[in-house]
Amino acid sequence: MRYNKVRKMDISNGPGVRVSIFMQGCAFNCYNCFNPETHDFNGGKEFTDEVIEKILDLAKYDYIEGLSILGGEPMHPKNIEGTTKLAKRFKAVYPNKTIWVWSGFLMDRDLMDKEVLNYIDVLVDGQYKDELHSFLLKYCGSSNQRVIDVKASLKKGKVVLYETEEVPA
Image 1 (cartoon, rainbow, N blue to C red):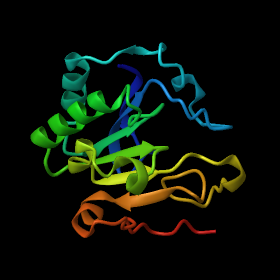
Image 2: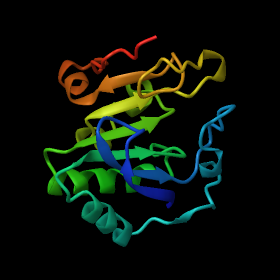
Image 3: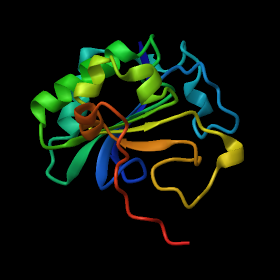
Image 4: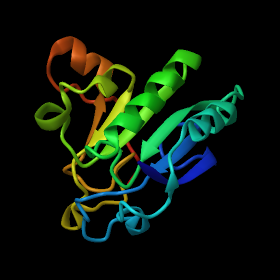
């Protein structure tokens, strides 16, 4: 598995100041994706235990609210094992910090049986659709995407949307 980059202080991918990792490789190749450089599974750098430890070290500060995992596609079969390992380790070290993940896969159709959901707080699911793009959306790029409260969804056995404040028009 490979990753594209790590941001040590990201304010655009989830609430507050976060550490973000962009996984490398995506088979969806959505038109006008904001991260096309992450699509090639052979690009980027090798994802290792040292990278996980670097992320944990970057997240140690009180002002870091959590971890954001984007892509590429973190839930692709080639990436989900590494995503799970990172999320599990992050929650073990920082149980009170949140993990947000962006995926083109749908939670209720593709991911309900995946271990990684046990560690994720919020999942933004669904492929980006350029014809449904809106700058008014919070945490996603197109109106077909859902911002999901994973813990509540697992408890209820169905998708429960995460409550966000509306972006003023």
